[in-house]
Length: 449
Image (cartoon, rainbow, N blue to C red; front, top):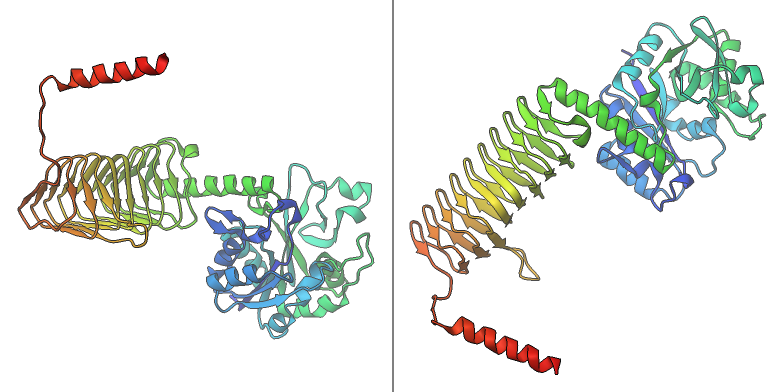
């Protein structure tokens, strides 16, 4: 395969998003849409050039975080797609191989589509246009074809009524042999309804030069452009469908696929069962034979083999769960390491903790990790039994094999194999409850007068 350069156009303002944030930074599957495109071309070892708009420093930062070697240029005036490509001249002028032009707001374009473009260029095509058939072609440029060749692309505003009846539309994605791009890009004019320099005019110039212009047809679902909130929602829904199929094909059981939401980087092993209404944020890795029960919210977490999570559990903030861990209903784990075989069955918060193996965390236990200024760590050893309704005030260390009594507030370290009682001594006062009731009733009666 020839060397590849991908020029990604990201200069649009996205005014229809009604957002202070550039449209290409809105997330799909927890990843900015521009980063989806970067990720796809990275899979081909492509060099990357990104064209941004003025004042889009946030876009530049997002791009360089994901692709440190990206060449970034600015389109100070938005004079059309060909003009945008010209801003990347420093990148394409010396490109020895193929050049792809893609759009930063089209996050779902697949590796298969990129592969098809490259294959045709390798086979001798000078240009390859990506077409698709939307349900409603209004507003899209039409591909004017002869056999398996493209002779022109007509923008909707410039098309005749007959041309507007054509269902095959232009996605905007075009592949070029490097010399073909350099041979046409500076000859594109702006004699059209909008007075802009259209990259699509490169087709007629190339065919006029006797060059070969092919096309491929891609699925409309992968070519949705995110330029408003409705399209963002549509892209998210499509991404989720793609990801669910990928996850299930890898050996995961989804009890109700449409109610489970994944992030772009979710990694799940084989023979995992996921119940309905589970949400995975970025940074989740799940080993084999895990069960995630209903209504769990998990992000930035590693879950070990054979673990059972939920229902209604929340795991976040760099949590690391070893094998065979059980977290039950309404348990939250944040920035904690939990050892193999440890259980927290009910109603607990475990934050900034290190917990050993085969330890039992009783219902209602919380690690009091924040004093209003600092966050401190709770360390619990192996084979510890934490009684129900315990408050463990960090920093505190509970040794291996220790017990804490139910209802205790633990503020000091507990030695190994010790029993810690951190609660007031119980005292019973016979008949005193009735006195308290009589006193309360008298007070109420006095207020009513």
